[in-house]
Amino acid sequence: MTVRSWLALAILAAGTAAQNPDAGQDALDRFVARSAEYEKQVEAYTRILEESGRRLEAEVELYREAFAKGLVSARQVEEVERRLADLHEALSDQQNALMTVHQTVAEVQAAYHQALELERHPSWFRFEGTRSWTLDLADELDEFFRTRFGRELPVSAYGQTETHLELGFNHEDRLDVALHPGSDEGRALVDYLRAEGLPFTAFNAAVEGSATGAHIHVGPPSPRVF
Image 1: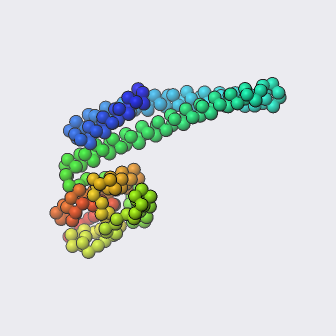
Image 2: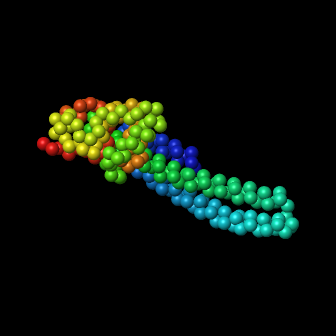
Image 3: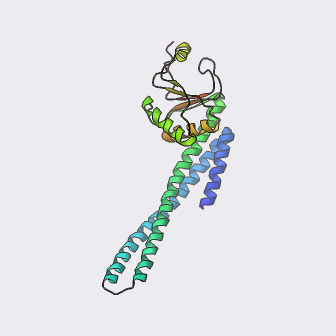
């Protein structure tokens, strides 16, 4: 499989998974399977490059020693060093390709699961996360947002608030951000949280008894206190 054909499959799978959850599972399964095949190809080629690199590194050392003894010219040494540099670049490209495969598979899977959540709950979707969240991480979110958009993160609730008490929720150690998940800024924040493995719930609209309007709740769901 070529890089171009794999990327085309990724785009198709992502589009199908996000727009049609019913057909998305089949598209996702095909994409994951083909990605595994492509990953094996990349890994096999990487091993070939690594073995070639070891031989070429030894050859470079021999040429340098021969040059020190006046047996070869500087141009000959430069040529073999250039070949080694080209090989290292090719190896770096393969390593980047592996990282791209892993990242893209994760993103397509996330798009599918987000689409399922939106189908089940049109007003909100949730990401359970793979890391623990604490308010100590709020500064990192703010730094990301300032760097990306040139303004501070629009936090609407930092920890427990009167509004959450009135709704009957314990909002301690949670963060609410006044961004619509469908906006450019909201999507960027959601993508960042997902990439960082941080849990969140994104509300696209008000949900009676749970949310007064569209926003992004960062942290695990708030437990009810009554």
